[in-house]
Image 1 (cartoon, rainbow, N blue to C red):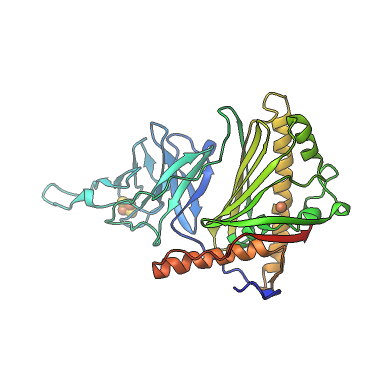
Image 2: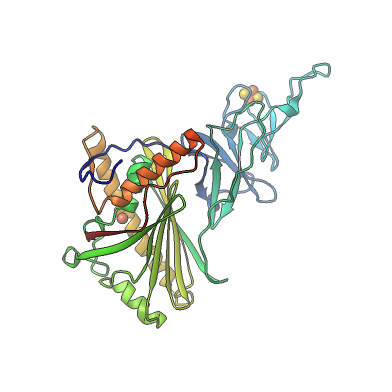
Length: 371
Ligand code: FES
Ligand SMILES: [Fe+2]
């Protein structure tokens, strides 16, 4: 996708990237002994918590005849399929018992595996690694460990608050990502007297630089036209506030705001559920206003409002997208979205050729837009 074409016909391909960690569900939705169904990248999963409270993720299909394992019984260690009673270790997926076997039948039970996925909890969310290629081969293949640990929110002190918000979006992961990366919808979608209005639109100039698998909007003093930032500067008694926003494949947007000893950090993900459905999860950590009553509630309220505005917008947009309209991405406001597609393409290309990924950004870039 060359950059010099100002108007780009752009229909996102909704390509889902395998070989990455994805957020599956909030930790508090997972109770011991009660496995629950989840869907990531069109793969049905059963996610549970063992006796030691450790989370696990299996493919929600018995390797015998495909019965969803979520229909089975879980004793805290093993899942028993509800069809013929085969039992599987919840973490490794290894088969432990086939009740129908008679003693002289020497089928090697322990060579059979239900598909299992690396599963970790971070910042109050359960993350699942969806391997490449495709699903873990249910049947005879052992689970493979994830090459990297699950992503984590950056934190800058030992004590902090943590909160999350989640919303289902009725669109492909690409439309969800574009919405997240798009700086120009703010004054129209997120209007509020205490934030910004259409009258406050002005020209912005931001510096971006390439980072591995993504790009960074470099540290700067954020828009001074919003009340929360003015308040923060006053509260932190800091001369300057710095913000860094990183986007990293497949779907991670992290934002770090620091003012003196105070900080606010968030990690937002847009997770493909199916080809036409995704979910946005915002998890934030902060040490600001930690001990002032109501402030965490206020922050949550503000964030909930933002996410709800985005969700509502995408719900309306999905009406428009139903009949495959011709779409475009323009410079400079949609350039981050273009980079997102270019990064995806570059990643796929490097997987295809086995060569290192070629970053689409030649170096630092300054973008200008009005918002
Ligand atoms: S389908 Fe699961 S044991 Fe037969
Ligand atoms: Fe938004």
